[in-house]
Image (cartoon, rainbow, N blue to C red; front, side, top):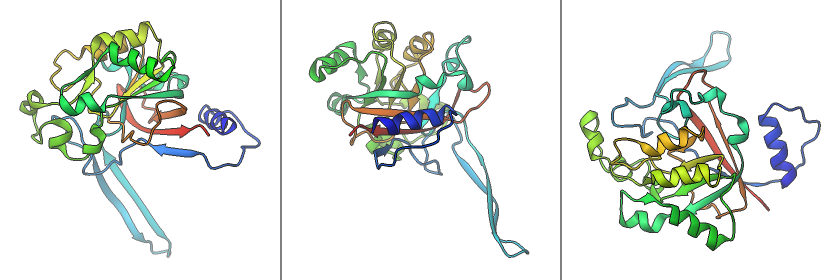
Length: 261
């Protein structure tokens, strides 16, 4: 299993490989499909796929080609540090070793089921370390609020199905406490953080301080991560590979977890 994940990581980095060990690792897709149901911020138009060609040509072969239009931030995507930090890294500048590596899943579904605006605290994170006898240090940290199970119901997922600027004031979903964001960066030096909600800051946030605190340390955030219900607390690696957009503040991202065996 270790040989497989190392091979996968090397391939992602462009390293040549003569032989890759044959096996069938458990791979969990943590990415929502991009389509007309994909959830974007209430002020964004969403995902649009236009069919350009779809049929048999005069030469007899079938040919299909499409064009899509979408904001950077929506669906399963990455927030690059530049999103809330002028000197922060843009998408193509994020080192791959921040996006590939050992990961953990912090389950906060219970408090989030009670409080739709719940903020994951430092105490939550320390309790996870104590319970699992493991450290969050230098890991990709995924926060499982349980909200991925509401996708793509905008009312349940965002707290409102309304669209437009006025809808932003009606958003309700969990996020990461700004103090916990700073602690993850300074005390644990994590690689990246991910959450199964529309933002690493909770719905009512207006200053987006968790974004600011993470990005001043060049720690990217994965948002709208798909269901984590099959993830263990530890013992897996994450591969989060975004579209490599030059100058991008964010990008659609394919996120998968590979379980150790």
